[in-house]
Length: 187
Image 1 (cartoon, rainbow, N blue to C red):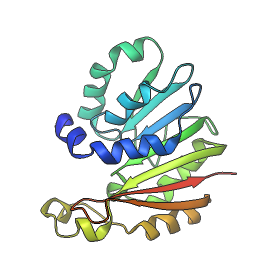
Image 2: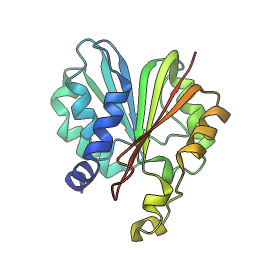
Image 3: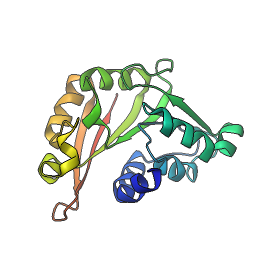
């Protein structure tokens, strides 16, 4: 399953990591890391910093702990079982945060975004990678437990959660699956 997630989301994951503009000493959080592709890519960019990952799927957490066991042992990666509405971290500790294709499953997106804001430093950056509702609405798997969002709706949620300087960048609009990066800042 993790290989399927990673392959199908390869481009959108790459765009999210690129959009974070990770610096070597950053503390980075990946919310809903799924197959772990973003964590793997982030590891190439971090030298003195650390990557944290949370996912609400216990099987994904266990798989990631095995996959990144060396990086966990060396202190470069930390993997936790957690829901976005209750992140197990202190306030103001992350420089960068990303989440890709997860907001569709959040029970209370505004609560989740406020929780992300709580753990992000005042000059932090958040990148949310999604596919637009128009591109996903007819896919059979989105009929079950998915809440689809247009990028503007995600922007409005971010503003409602207290983020500022929100931008939307569209990629592959003419393709079957687009990639939209909604980026927000604190401070």
